[in-house]
Length: 419
Figure 1: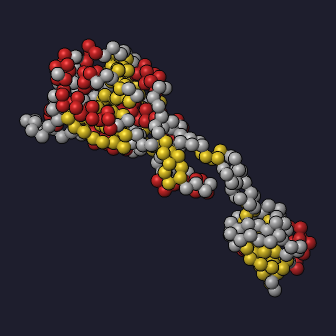
Figure 2: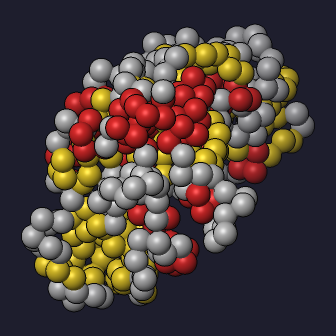
């Protein structure tokens, strides 16, 4: 029964969403849809497991840093007025203070030896570096008249004070942020769960018994890309042109994953069943095909509160579409701060010319070069949307909007591939 139902529904009969939308319209439709998609659940992980995760809480200082006035170097702590009064006779050295000690208040007309990071005794107002002083008969003498109030002293709270905002939710954590969490006494931190993604390729050419068997490439490419963004990815291949087989696999994936990605089977051929199967499962089409090159078949659907990204089957097209649509969606799912995830466009002088069709936005693989302070962007030769070698030679892509012309010597921007 399932097979007959699927066979009777063509993709275009069931899809009532906008067809062949422009690139900007596709992005706007996806952005509007994101407003109704819940953020990923929150979990608590140890600080050791927090690297690469997206912070799900604000972190404010529960203690200042430094927590007290401390010495910035090894040397001698005293009161400047006492040393000035002592003159050539110097001040008696009455003790040594190490980091972690709680020294008594500074007595009148005395000095302490002090190590870097040690707390200053109350009453001391400067530290003279060890190499700028000498000890004679148990007294500290200055080699130079360098003492002044505040010298080599790190004041309490000079880095941040109690209550200061240290890290905001949406921050992607890395090695730079972990010391902050540890300093604030955190054993665990709230982060967004990693999204679970199923990536499905389909086609009889990938079946083990295919007469013209082809190695499936896209699931490996996409899994590596999305895992680098923190996702947990499971790869599947439907090695047949059976709509029933595809239905069973996609149904399984929807139960497993937060996001479903298909690659291939989204065009209008007799064996392209992805759209009809998803329609039969109840998915609603957000948009059907986009006026971009490569990647025109790109389609986005929604099944309940789960998004389905239907990518083209050609590897380069699938990679570009994932960069343009899937990766930004992952950032939004974890409420990741835009400045933390945005690919920074790199400006340079175009070494090639290109004319985009009046209705098509083009994304061209390019290579960025810097030579003696001059940035240049060169087109990477490609045989088309199936080309995988060009991706290894490109450092990013240049967007040429519909109807635009790029001339040799024009300034343009390369959008780097996300790692």
